[in-house]
Amino acid sequence: MVEKLKTNSKAVVSLTLGILSILIPAMGMLLGIIGIIFSKIAKEEIENTNEAGSGLATSGMVCSIVGAVIQLFLVLVGILSFHSI
Image 1 (cartoon, helix red, strand yellow):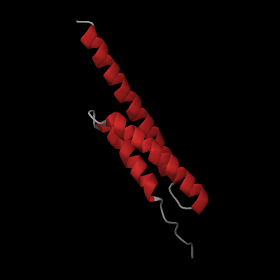
Image 2: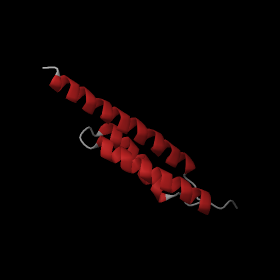
Image 3: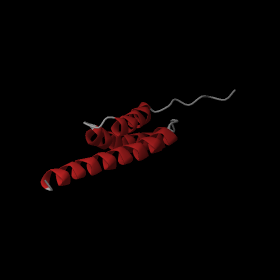
Image 4: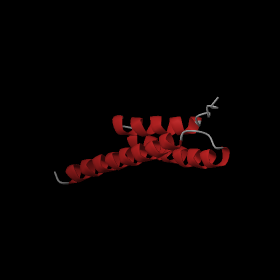
């Protein structure tokens, strides 16, 4: 029988935070930064403990970075549009 590996919970949290950082405009940058931190921690734990979830941690990292960049862009556009009036 094949033993099923336990999925790292921090990898799941990082993916969840990454998706929320894209979807929630008000707190997206904060959620993205927290998602990046959780993703790095999850990748280190996965390497040390041989748990499953490496793909989830990578996806969480990508989504968190994309969400943080989108939110940063929206903040910059808001600031520039406010000062151009």
